[in-house]
Length: 274
Image (cartoon, rainbow, N blue to C red):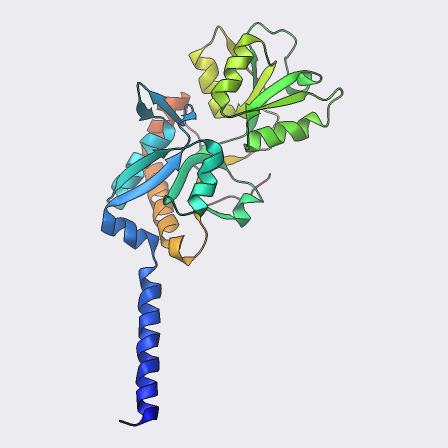
């Protein structure tokens, strides 16, 4: 066999091997082969994610259980601090983040978002007996607490710059710590998404009250995956499942269970306003 023929065969073999390697680099295929999809969240964000007697519960748990059924896999739920969730995704320690992540202009450059799983407009909560805060602008000169690294905290900082005097903003590891300090009088208000605050206030009506209207721009929570061809099919499959779950009424049932009402959500990823 001549050198030219051998070289051509070798080149063809390497090309086929390259195609095979590319074809194998598919997260959805790997997940289905393993039968398990590893997802992470912070289980300190009720009603979306929380622990009750060491059992994981919430909107995301109920909704992803349904998505996993659609995909024909079992879900492996991982609990992490919020500040570790997105870095863990990028490091490929798990396949998807199901913590509710606000869609923002900066984040869509870095992550692949699913279709929305909830409305996420930022709002404020006060102590129920506080007569000094009746609208968002009334936090001028007061102290507001919120979760570190959240879109809602960033929004209240921006909103605070429009007020005089500007409020003091305290950052917490999770929202529950902010709520505890609010109840104890160490902060005057807590910032979070409207669904989170509505749930917290409903659980403790004698302690908390939501300040209406919300001060934030209209926004949505979604789940996020990695960008790139390897993960594209996984995000597409999850989106297909989420749209099906919304259309057949399962999403509305989950929303009513945790929010007390259903929400009309986009079936495509909306253009971020934040």
